[in-house]
Amino acid sequence: MADAENFPFVLPERLPQRISPCPVVEAIFELRFSSGQPWTTMPGLLYTTIRDKYPEQLMLPISQIPDEVRRKEAAFAFLPVVQFLSANFVVQLGPRVVSLVTKVNEYPGWRPIAEELGWLLERIQQTNIATEGERLGVRYVDFFKTDIFSELLLELQTAGRPLKDEERQITTVVKYGELAMRLLVGNNVIVSAANGEPRRGSIMDVDAWYGPLEFELFNNVMQRFEEAHLAIKRLFFGLLKPEFLATLNPVY
Image (cartoon, rainbow, N blue to C red; front, top):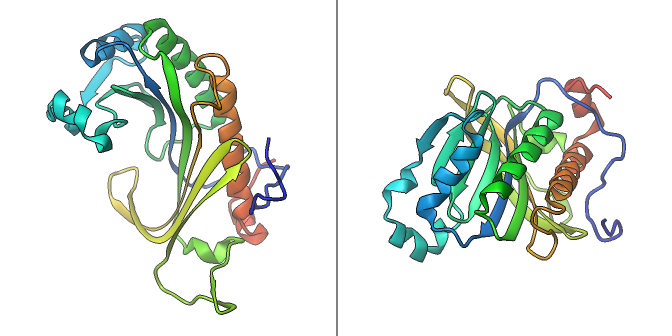
């Protein structure tokens, strides 16, 4: 799938099945689409097909903004408006986006996610709310208590010397075959713990996506989600120094 000569990161073939403690704060599996359905009918259509597993609905703050304003403002185009909650996942829906999201700090592993994604995609197809795919993306946000830059096979230099700084955030976007990947690493970030208390540390935030020409709606969508997930997993473990990975108790 990828041009290894042009890709700047080393991606290992042998990957751990799990690590502990698990650093994943949140994982998002998103499908952006165009639709012939009016927005007012879409939440009800989707809820009808998923309510047995997702009985609870929650309107997000953006729902207070009038529909006409949201349609005209580009920044609102792909934001979810309503959530459907189950015991393990959250489904988010907007006029041009639907996503499956893991509960914060409760990452269940890829297999349960893949099963839930397959189930959800079947229900979305039944509703006919999505007619054309515009973007298919996977995003993982990982949190570390330590300054993660010292634990990564990633260097930032000035005049040939390592940059000495106390606070750093870098972002880069690279292509991995047809897949675009945005990597963000920051070492002075605050995220919420499981109890809602703030935690200060580092994050590694990877967003990988296919454009509208790289997937066929409801034909190879699950395959593309799997490919994006695997690419992010390989990038994550390819960036970790072996001695740091050992502290995460990898199981192969």
